[in-house]
Picture 1 (cartoon, chains in turn yellow, red):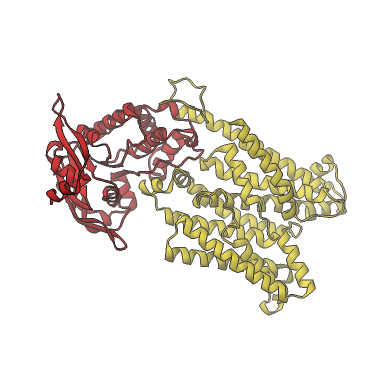
Picture 2 (cartoon, each protein chain N blue to C red):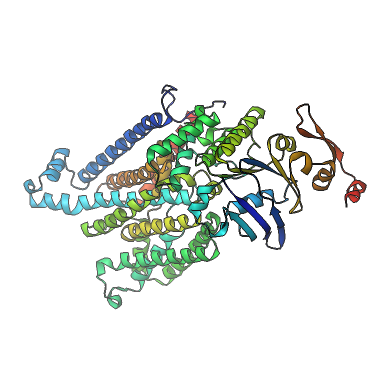
Length: 360
Length: 266
């Protein structure tokens, strides 16, 4: 066949088997994954260093390796304040990146993100109800957890509704997206209604929640999100071949014998749970789940063995980086991460896209 | 060896009947059957039904078992279906598209066996040089070859190909049909393919199934199924079926049939 342009190993001798040539190709991708992981570690360290009380690199590394050598104040700053924040940024970013990556694949839409089906709005509705109606006492839930619990319940309810509707009317990508859009509009209206009846104090809390911030992180919350991520990731890995095959086209995937509708519903359920648990503790962070997968696709292609971990790592990197910037822009003030990710990330993303376009 | 039977097949989309009481004769193992007929006559729908992707009335049996009773995996193991559309233009490399198509449905097979089958199919189709090219950087013809590789890598006993040569130049059309012939004969399988190029079908297929208005108009060896009469009935075209020096029939068209010509076919 006439040869145009290659994305893979062109330098291998023709006598080598395709599998051997592909292994070299995969090795290069693994190196890129390693680099992204290293960059993520750097942002974590910088994240711990930055804040009102600036800490040196040496002090942070010593504090991480040998916590007993720290003074009580430094121990609290590093281990009880900054590390939970840094860890929360990483794990929430990873959840949103992975969720976005899977969502874009099963909906066959590069504009899809964890917020496409209204999960984030449903979480906002749950959080708003908890704030406005002060549900902690009637529900006997600790004050600290009432907002995340209600946000999660709201998100879960929206997932179940979408799943039920898709199950009844067919789970094609178009149908699911249309249900999602309808859900978003309905939820936005309900959120507006609650904001309309809320007093000024509650309204302020709701608005702050919708800006998205990891400043509410504790080790307990980090552990909850991490456990959900740890449960979902292996399930995603089990379906990497099916999702890769789906990228060749739905008609083809069906022709191979894949049950595409079933795969889609399972992935959407997983994606929704990942999103729900992530935003329940941080509020709405919308940009990461859209752009993380795009960066991963540019770097690793669409073999989902690399694309999905790449999406998770890219999401973690973006939110971890945004967390550093949110603390550094204005001294002593932590700008909500949801704002920073969009303000910093969108120009960066556009620059990446344009660079890629020029490279073609 | 494979045994496929289709009896009284009916299919409708809403109120529109697409296939009406279609029964196919038994085909000898190793045969290539060309499905011919004008646009919208039900050729693709028949192939989709045989692939298990449509709900139908009637009976389709594969080696004596009703097709609708077979699981997705068992059906996919026996039947390979190439859709009319080309594989999606994504950044997947051809090698990734083919290996994922196989591993997704056969996770039980050893990796080495799958890699060997993929290697083999790239060599067989002569597309080794585009193995690591991204689908979104390929021509339509190249993508069609990758789609075909995805289907035949599993070596299914029955190949259902919906216009497998529509985006290919002459040389690659011949290459594809020769490869398909080799696979079908080696396995004692069957290949049913919808084609728009009548002469290509007459030249390469052992049997021709000619459709008109969702019904099977004629089925048999090329020279018997395709006559000037069936040509006029199916396509509304006036033409002749002649034989070339090797004895292969070919169609020469003279023009579109007039209402009087069509009335005469009644």
